[in-house]
Every structure is written in structure tokens, then in C-alpha cells.
Length: 475
View 1: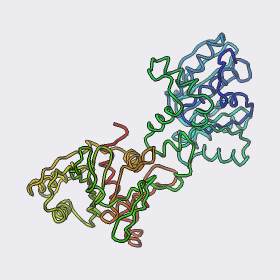
View 2 (view 1 turned 180 degrees about the horizontal axis):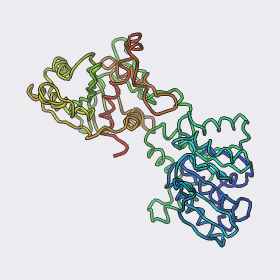
View 3 (view 1 turned 135 degrees about the horizontal axis):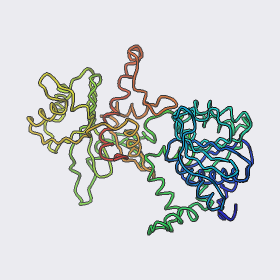
């Protein structure tokens, strides 16, 4: 073993030296867990301890990567083996694997397909990224008979919400139930044990990166900055699941702005700021800001929600909202003109891409109606929207990354008096438990009992369109 890899990191050595039949690894992403697991599986096969290893991950690319690791270790150990390649392993032809056959009859199989793939297949079971399988319960039902029969089981995964079999098993292990041997490695644990110097430096030097000898601190900062939002960092790298249990859509929103003795008092980390804060800001050139007005639109009639803001390179300042009940686009335009009859700066329209599709009686779609009305009023108008709306979870991820960046600095500011419904959504809109879906539908009975419920969606949707357009995470 030491001849093949003399420098296993402490957390990897601990995994290899653990001979428990049922092992589960609560792990950060990209710390070499699958890599060390492949080595264990090769050793088990060439030693004759195991005749069949059945490996499954969340996608085909991960199965390919695993079998490459196994192939490399096999060659490094100078083991005589038969073939490596893809094969069909059932008569129906719907279950495929990448396989290595050894001369002693042992075989490693990296499965690539459906949740029933483990059925009727005895041997060591390895489930990689268990929390990210599309149907973890079906996968477990298929694998469980082999586990009960007495074969070894290895589960390795990052977290993916709290409504997963993996989350359940980890909690069982923490309580001493289920016979599990639990291992836990955050990205900080890995770095403290030499991951940067041994792995990151080696990879970067090999590919010719100029910053190959990056510091531990800089590596952690780069990793955190590369996450799509704070929640990804907390869950998939630090293994924290508590914050998501609250179910809030807007993570990190801080509301501590108060009106005292005729003056607004707020802390530097607050997302709630009065419009006067924006109007009094001074630019790098020493002049006060003169910013276009951004109108970000969501076109549901009840309510029809448009959020107004100013934007600079780093921040969005939402200073007003048009959240109108039983309102058509034409009515919202008239309300805007009533409030802002003499606006001097350019108006940039953002919002829901579906606004380009709906036609009114005058054959103009929603955006055409707005542009036509504002242009006739003498305003300079520009349209900046996506051709197609991204998934809501992508918009919320971009939103949260602006609500608070990785250094805890806010970049979305909301007027506490003029934008009550947007703040209402930030503080109360939540996920459906155990998923990334927004609670965005309510029965008529629920709305009649609590009329505020009808406002618990669209204002934040409207604001998030602009944030995603300018600071999106996925191109």
C-alpha cells in the first residue's frame, strides 16, 4: 500500500485503516474521498477478500472517474488483470457498467444507470454522493439485500438538504445506531491536514499554474468565492445543515434599520437602508450618484409586482415597489407615472422573460406596453431581460450571493418604508421542506384567511430577475 501512495493524508489513512463492515463518510467536496475509496476496492479485489465491488455515483462522469482511479492503482501495483471497459451486465440491457476484471475472478463494476441497478448483485456496495442520487430510497431498496447478506457497505457523500437517506443515516451514526462507523471531514479539516500542499500544489504544478504554491488561506477563499451562494459553502464544504432547516429563501438578510428621533439609524451589515442613503452616496469622482432607474417586473395580475431600484457596479438599491392588486400592466404604468412624473434619468426595464409573450387588446406585449407609454411620456427607456428565465433556484442563489457575500458584506439594500412587501418576502418566503422548491402556491381558502399570503412570492421574484441578470452565477 505504501509503495503505491506514500503520502495518504491523515483522514484518508483513517478511512483505509477502518475495517468496519458499514462505513459512512460525511465529507466535503473534492477532498480525495472517492480516490482513496477506489484504492481500498482495488486492494480488496486483488487480495481475494472481495469478488465483486458494485460502485454507484450520481452521474456517469463520476463512474468513469472512479474506474480510472481503479485502473491506475491496478497498474501501479503491477497486478495482472484481464479487461477494462464498458459492458452490459443484465439481459434487459438497461444496466451498464465500467468494469475491471482481475485474473483471480474478482471484478470492480462502476454502474451508470437506474436506481434498481443493485438488484440481484451480491458483493461489496459503494455508494458515492448518495445524497445527490435522483432516487436515493429506490437505490437503497435495491442495495439493501446485499448489505443484509453480510457484504461490506461504503457510503460517501456531501449533504443535499435534510430530506435524504444520507442525512438520516448520518444522524443514526451520530446517535450510535445502525452499526455505522462514521467519518466526518470538512474542507477546513482537509486543509489543516495538508490537502493544499499535497494535492492542490501537485495538481497546479503539473498543469503549469503560476500560483501552484497557493497558501491555505487563499485556497479556502478561492473555494468559498467559487460557490454559487453562502448556503453551498456551508452545506457542501463545511457540512452545516442547520440553516436550511429554517426553510428561508433569503439567507443572511439582516433587518436592523430604525427611525429614531427623526433620523434613520442602521448598522453597516444591514440590508435595509432608506432611499436617502443612496441619494447621499458619493462616487469615486467626488460627485453624487446619478444612476438610471431599474424597473424589475413580474407580471401576475394579483399582485402585479414591479420593484424599482438604482444599481452601481456592486450594489442594487431598491427604493420603491409597485405591488398592486388586480392590476394590469397599463394600470401599473399609470401608477408609476403618478409617482414619478418628472424623472430625469434613463429607465432600464428588467424582469420576467414571459413578458415578451402575452398580448393585450392593443396587440402589444407587456414590455412593449411599458416602453410605448414611457416613451410617449418623454422618458428614455432601455430593455434588458433574458431570452428565457433561469430556474428559480438559480435566481435565488444569485439573490443570496448579493444579499450577503462571502465576507458578510451586503450588496442588496431595501428601503424600509417604500418596499414593505419585498421585505415581507425576504423575511418569510420559504422552501418546501426537504427540497429547493419555493412555497409559491396557496389555496383560495388560505388567502382568504390570511390575505397577506398573496404577496408572499411575486415581489421577491420581481426583484430577483434584475439581480440574476446582472450578477448571475451560471452565464
